Length: 177
Image (cartoon, rainbow, N blue to C red):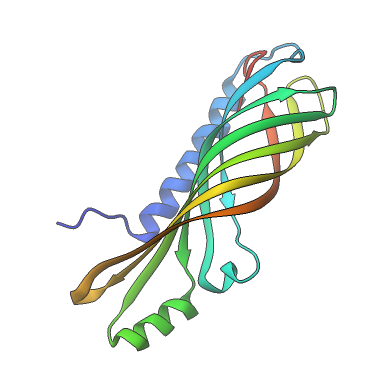
């Protein structure tokens, strides 16, 4: 038996991960606003490629861990490591299939280690939306399942930038979701 997940299974896993994260946040006890200091958290969400990458892979999901230091009432500096899974676009998989002469299924995984800055916009003592930008080292694995030829891999490491946003749900004075 092959030890891999179908796209449907991966999408379902991503949805379940996000729902369980939201449920945990909703069930958490309310705490007073976190003081200045170091904070730890887990992250999960959608990954949406842009630029040339969007021609090869479509949307996907991510999960990771983060640690950051509050510098003042609006800004943080932090470090995170994530896992991103992205499936191939239909057009790219069709191009690969024509070139190989058989069906090809493609996906990429990206594992960034990023140093970032965040701008927080506190809504209340437990919920804080934020925007972030960072610089990181990205480990990238491209995998193509080429029918009778099996799985083909291409790996690499790149330096890159990232930006995004999210919402912190305060679980304790130092732990966030």
